[in-house]
Length: 446
Image (cartoon, rainbow, N blue to C red):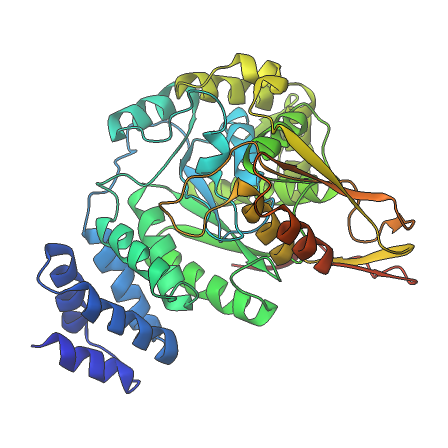
């Protein structure tokens, strides 16, 4: 068996056998197959795709390249949530402690931001001292003690995926549905979870620009999860404009703290409660979990949403967040005093160029502007400025007057300021007619 023959077979659009995929992945991890041959293989997959059987086989190979976390000793249902990445996508930071307060254990292995998209780990690391690189025993201890922990991918979890992802990053092979699906699901299945809820983004700020592509990705991942015996549900959600009012690490943490105290934007609230309700539904279907709130058993999605909202209002979710920050080495004082979080030295107002309704706020362009200010990275090895980012004072559907503030840019380095402002304004469309309201949750794939 030769790598070049396997590459040629996939280049011609033929289906690879399990043993051929195994030869390539195991050979790459062991160092027997070089980067340039795997790069060619990834590009062939990008152009020719994979069958469902191939994608499932690739997922299993990446999963089996490392160890699986054993959560059998953790009481209660173990349910995770994963987003395919977006702009201002801060829901995990709210959801994880919220669901822990509801009685569900949330073992979350999260990722870093890349390009115009933000990453949960980067946002949490804006909290002084917060550690995302926990050992597996530390991770399990936190889950047992407080019911929630958010960490990065360890060396034991799907090492083949970690190596492949780094290569995909520099070979322009990120946006392939089979490669995205197998990457995400290999890590999630390694967590030892009972069930999973996926937030699959669609729109200008997502990897999947259309609902059709988002649906294909969602169906692929749901199929992999359910084939592995893990109840999996996907919500296709809107990513044509940023979620909430902030883009940037420290700014988003501040918004999360505000949300956990009951003050949050409608779209952020809608998305968080929808995902949380489905996480409870998966727990109920998988292990017979009963969500009990305010003295009664809740029984459907709408009641779950109401129950979760009450855990925000009574402070239960905020308390869990403080516990999680403390358990992972973060300074809990910053949660009570968000002004202690990193703040940029400089800021600049962005004004509307015309009067009218904001018809669109292109999430991709706004995310790119935030990255140029220092809040993101072009390569996974780049450093970021935790304090940089954007606060949106207006969103799609709002009326603005010419010269009125639309957003505020926060930065410490003026090098890319002019370009960032230009890109931001290029993503804001103003017109005389108010746009139709766009739903936050577009579809549910079970």
